[in-house]
Image (cartoon, rainbow, N blue to C red; front, side, top):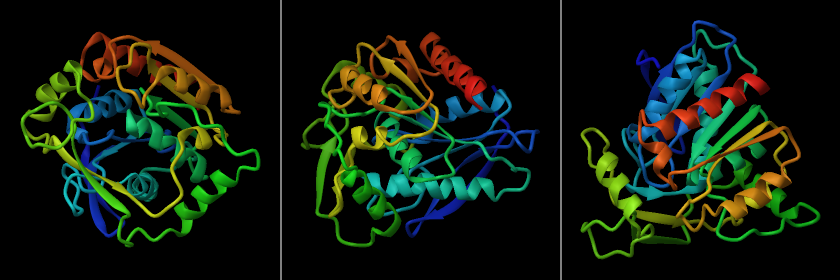
Length: 299
């Protein structure tokens, strides 16, 4: 593990995003770009994953999504998956332009909702050469992709041309976990979610909010099964067999995984949706070891 990094910032969708860049001594080392899930921040476990990967000799960029953590963007604590997809690509552009980075290997890493998001980035952005998805949010039910791939084409066209300055179709207020922060509905109403939110969200410097707004756009519906079927790069799934989150159903993840027409690795892990996020725990190290074994095999 290495704590040697520089603070960086870059522009994405009219906002300045911020994160940490760990520079490898090897200019040609692969670049790994990490971001957090639904409403977390990089200070909640992601920076710890980044440090472990950097310690193995990779260039690593970990950052906060727009509207969260140290990054700018309004409204604060608004989850906008289309902006997050664009953010990954802008992070890649930033890192590849940095001094000392000369690589053709770009890996996108995500967990939970971010584990779903990296499917879109990997399928849309031709610079991506591998995908790592931890406890991926593939959906509560599998949606069969269109036989003519028209659903994927619509998503990719919007990724290229869609105007994210347009007024969203809807904004829905929710609470992440069952903490007494508002009267909004709770989306993850089980003890492990509350425990993780209390342990990591409420610690110093997390800059986290239990209250968030979920943005829906006038755009093609984002479907992980549709994107998975179009992935053409090596992909790793780290899946909690006892995942409690409905939209991270292991059975749906398996169907998405099976549809990927590229080299792929599957790692089962226990501990539920949040177990592997506890920094320096056995499950955390098992997850990172799976990442490192995958990278060594496929890059």
